[in-house]
Length: 181
Image (cartoon, rainbow, N blue to C red; front, side, top):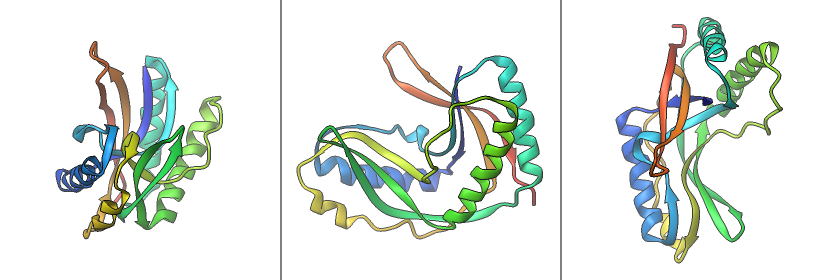
């Protein structure tokens, strides 16, 4: 099973991300766009694991939920980076990045104490909107306005990543914990 840990979003946030995607689509020639139901913020990619690992990860998430209070973030700035003349486009976290980083550090300590994973790159909180984008008019990106509302981070989920026979990527929550109030 291909697994990762993430923060999932409510419909209102996904609708905003979909609007951002629409602007990117009109200003690009090609791209692979994140599906509406797949919008999330990855906290830790885990890779291929088995069912017994899933059970241990659920216990670790339970531990995390007992020591982490809910908090709010704000999103909005649109960025991209080049990879072979194509862009990966993402929405940046504007507010409380440090709280996300603290959450990830707690999560990493719990996971690293039980698993021998290859170390991840430094965590950079973001929401991927599209991959392999070739822009024809980047000026339209200036029309994108930040999301106005705070986003409550009060849940963390263990996610399963699968591809169907048509190679469509689906992310499914396997286990979700509520952060301690």
